[in-house]
Image 1 (tube, rainbow, N blue to C red):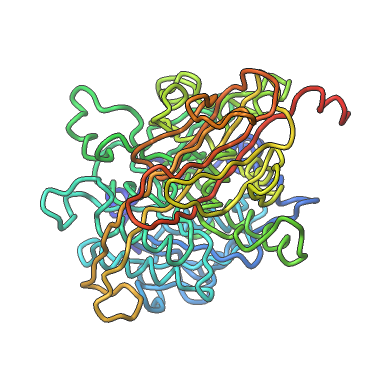
Image 2: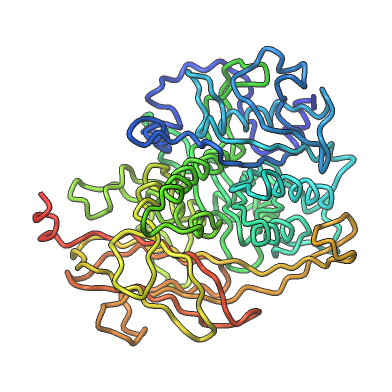
Length: 537
């Protein structure tokens, strides 16, 4: 097992180690105070992540019962397979406490401390000690996990990172072109897996691969009055000023592109350690697996819908871009006052300096889709289910007020999604668009797999925008609001509806950098006019 010092230097966020937990279940990160995932475990939903494969890549690995002595008495969670890079793990080697606790957040079956998806199929790989490994070996491990379960691994958790000082490029910067970052963006597209990356915590040292485009980067929140509502000392948690500027500058993406996609509970999280004992831990390492395992719950639901041939469900529901758009669009921002106009959100999320979304530049500036500290807000797994469950709807006919789509758009063209009911004045519309940067493997031996010694090429990010418009308008200059970032692979709108009436969403392919046709995922959540609500009561 690695020494605890190794975790502190190379892992993300053990700020409180193995203190016994005394927090009540009602403040659990999985319950209503946190991501509200436990509601999905119970009837009528009965979602536990069954038959859904997820992955984990870290320096070490969780112990596997029947293989490793360290977990000989710990049956709280069962892994499907464990590896050392791209080979089966050897007994009692590379077993790590940090990796075990991350795994417990995802798949623990302990009744007192359940994981988010206790019946998901977890595949975990250890990349090895930092002194003997680097980004090529980390990419190899990543690829190997992504190829498990017949190549069907829906999400992969990264609760570790690399230092810029260890990057082999001359004068390395966070521009998305470190080998490991490119590897993640390539694998997301080729293996169709959502990468969930723990954000660096502002203390320097391990920012790679938080400069990825195609994954989701997660910062963490802490409890206030028993409820997770406030961004803690998380990745890029404050703009760098003063004496900290030199250190934090090295953790921030080059240019205006934002790093954080979402926040999730990560402070004083109840987990099981490698021996099955209750512990409390803090850090982005433990926020990220909340998101990864939530994908397993949603994907179990989608597989159920596909298996029973429900209308408006296709295999597009498995796409990583769809999961990204659904998770980001359903995030909580501003507490609803009880009238439903703010989509019945249960809480207001505050940044480290006590700002809410309505005070953010992302709310005020069409060029900025993500808040610097909270991304689109705090993940709520039950709300993600509500966003996902209406199914897929295309632009050929009017669409329901909540839904999602996976589609393509051609260069300089657009797709209009006309909402089938009027929206209420004063309500908020949430819209998220997600698509991939195109990274390609420089495959020297033509085996269609990454091998140590090979590299990747960045073919760039096509530029897509979204607009919220009145249904009768066609001129985007008349849009109610838009998201028009020049640098991000996600666009996001959360805006108030100015007048009751009919509206539409436009997806615009504005500027080509690689292919003529671009695939995208779109998720939307809007509120019907009050007259319609009365008619349903």
